[in-house]
Image 1 (tube, rainbow, N blue to C red):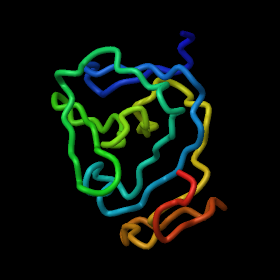
Image 2 (image 1 turned 135 degrees about the vertical axis):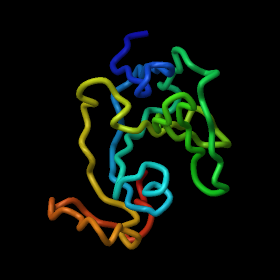
Image 3 (image 1 turned 60 degrees about the vertical axis):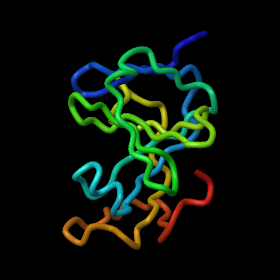
Image 4 (image 1 turned 90 degrees about the horizontal axis):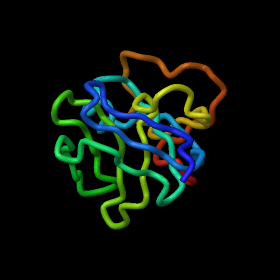
Length: 138
């Protein structure tokens, strides 16, 4: 297997590898992401199904299953948001772009859940398509 990307949490307890180039990326402005990250928006990248592999730190992982959407997976030692995973198909993973070492090779292509954007931080006028709810293609 050729490793194209690696990454992990802030304290280094959790490490992962991604064996295929990332498919796409987007910003999310939903209130769930705001609460989870403490920011106005967070960026995630879609992996090719089955290309994400946890290298170390499984015991340090915490999982929040909000009941709709992907499970939110984080490091219990440092609190870093690391990835999201389909609860019904663990091969489907969205990686938090800030958890990737170096250049992820993709850039966010859209902004989703802008209907819930934080009122204290205007969405930048960056020309990206905006969706009031979930981006249809991710």
